[in-house]
Image 1 (tube, helix red, strand yellow):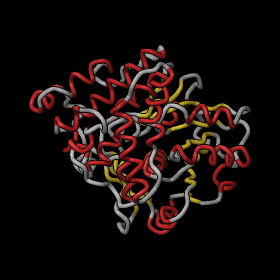
Image 2 (image 1 turned 30 degrees about the vertical axis):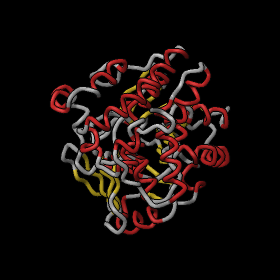
Image 3 (image 1 turned 90 degrees about the vertical axis):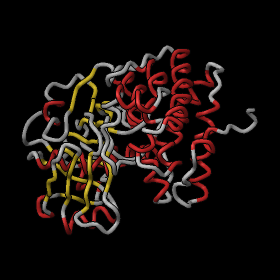
Length: 344
């Protein structure tokens, strides 16, 4: 599994897939990108530019990239398949892997939410499926910019299930830190807490750094996290500590005055000014978001214990409305988002 000759397939050449695959290819790993549409076309023609918050800015020439929209070509020789499609495409990708993937290939879900690896396992019962999580933000270049560029806009690493000797080391390359963990379900729930902010970036139409620097927005995020933590406690879920702060302290820190928050949360605010969120990008492009995998996961978990989640429900409803209207990010203010109907 850790041999230099192994092939890594990127099953979903979007922002995360292209960044992860780009770093691996730049490090000399044999990578095949599976995608569709414009991204495939521009990578075939102009290659891929990979940059990050730490100052790296590298280019993969078109002739150095293997990119295809043919799943058979992408998967038939892959020893490792990194699934980087959005949650709504998980079932479809599982079907593609079932038909075209090697029976002994290791499949790793690098997707948001807490259920995608389980869905892959259910659909691929004969294959080894690992849970993974990308702990950083990636933004893509505007349409028309060539070559296509993916930019890691925050700090963080990739975490994957432990258990396969040498796999994390094989994937750990310059610009892409990879860590094997034995508590990936707890990691997923911890990441979900901060991913509840994706919707606020999408609704506000603000860059992530500006939005997080505003206490009015952080208070809304804190209310969502309070609801999520209550649901997790009722379900016996203990989120992992994956950053400087214990998850239980997040709501308190988020509610601090701006000046004090800026002092205590330097890592959280170490974000490129151009960073947004994948949900913002989905609304911008008129696509379905992952709201059901983020706020929706909290709401479903809370309902099992009869715990109310008014803020998560409010945010989810506003995102679904924006999805339906297809006008892009609505540019709402914090007052409009926090005004829960029927609550005085």
